[in-house]
View 1 (cartoon, one colour):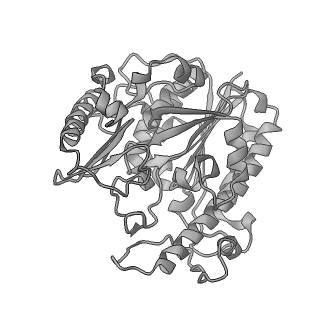
View 2 (cartoon, helix red, strand yellow):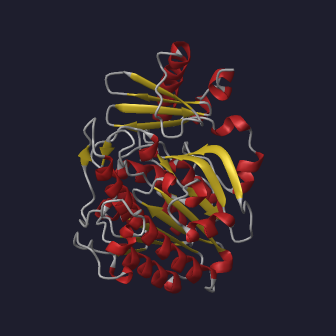
Length: 406
């Protein structure tokens, strides 16, 4: 019987993991998972708001949807009606209290610890959550879905201090000891040492996460259900660390450090192993992916998401996943193969060349005004289609948006 385990890690941007090109933080567990998984290079959140993201995950519609699937059974309820046992394990009250969470037959909610350094890895919030997930893995009866949402870097940065210090060079200042996630705007002439301390603290949390993931992978792959259990590991949203002078969780300019997240799908039969997919994937795609994995029919109501199982990505037309829309408050953004457009609430456009300008440091809308206008028009069309849950309405992109300028 097929089973599935979903790991949704909050505030985990793809740029801090080895499989996505990071070279200064060792992530052996993520590397091991990537070697056995389908890795999506361009997975983007469709919102920076957690409640909205979970509408997308659990209902298969885009963050712009006008209905949020009021006429569609949520993921857990639909699977339960087909005899799949859905479990929710989380330490985030936003997820635990989400309306669609009611469909989970079993819910295990961990309280959030105090914002102070843990004496050992085992006493950290992440370790306690992953230990609980392993306990649930041992209890769940196949076929099952275990959905694990970790506050992770949204919550206390409580990794033992030595995990932060391991990244220091000889001349570096000591990283901060606070377990409170940092929140600030950096001055135009900010001290690089201040930012370096925040980065080392975040890296310590990523190292902690990697340790926990390694233990979970060992438990999964040695379990009785492991041979039939798919694992999808993703981030819900990233954590800005000064790439555009902002550090924290409150302000949400839709840059890559916030919206570009990991997406790794392990299938026990080996499908997609060690494959890097270049299509664009977003949260609504998770709903139909899991339905297809469990061989459960999609609802009759229109969905925005499309299954991202390996055979789907391998055989679909390249035009099927070449646009991604993102919305948060008054800000909107569009990703296409060759460009990224971010529109402020004032309508001010910011345009970047992709994939070369990965972290969006070179704004070029003034240099390519015609392309910027085409992107703005495409963004408006995307929003209209997403509001109506009408993905087939999306038109094929012109070559300049797909291939860029010669």
